[in-house]
Length: 359
Ligand code: PHE
Image 1: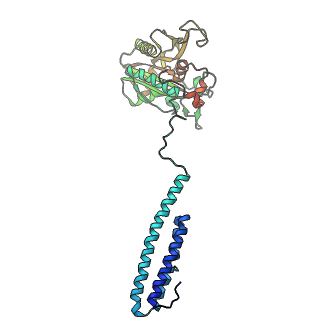
Image 2: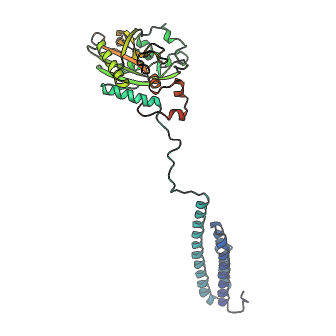
Image 3: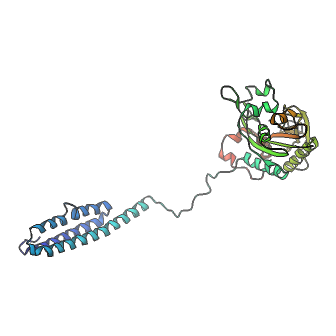
């Protein structure tokens, strides 16, 4: 430390030297514990309101007038030097902190993304639906969509279900709302009504979708999938219907399997039938899958009832048409050889991930 014996200017110069020495000492210490916070502390210590450089500046007041400019210049130079130096260290400290956090957290942004574990797959029902729809597109059908939550009118009344028809029974239908006018559709046939109420004939439509019935066992789930199809034009007859279904089934299951129609009843078709396919497992000999009959029941079909045309405002004297509907899940079950339909909807990724794109 200076003894303060020289001129006031010499005294200032020696104080400046002291401060520089002190800073040098502090910076040496800083190197072992470098942090932005420590640099900030030094800034306060030297340049802050009560800092050493600021205090030195205060001494100017008591200096003789003629020495003030020279002493002021020296102190200002010191201040600028320190500001520059501490700024460099602030930058160093920040780089160091970033470096440290990167190595500590071991974040390696160059690592490849894992793509092989937990990868999703298309659901077997989706795969099956795509195969079936592709076949209908080939036959000239357009794919249509309709609501799963619907009014009784579209699902039943307009499809010629009388008010006391057993299918409206609580055991089959999921009702929504107090007056039971809103329901979960029990079949995709509601799309016949939706489509015909907005589109003009001629129509050639297929419509896939979820359907709901209060039922659950090895071959039934409360939610299942259907595909509805219908063709409306002048002069459509049962030969067209049989031809389309036969071509479709042979294209999907193989040319050598026989198909057949059996008379049946659905309120919205007349005449109505069910269509069967020769058993894909035993080829008609009789086995466990076809319950020894040699045939698999696939779905229903028939000529669209004139009452349906009346309900949607089509001229039933001019137009005729046929409709068919069948379950996608059941076909997926046959094609993939599944024992229990319910497995499809239990969300087990290991089970769902094993199906090939082309069944
Ligand atoms: N909707 C009927 C069912 O779910 C199937 C069907 C559709 C029958 C079209 C005839 C015509 O059982």
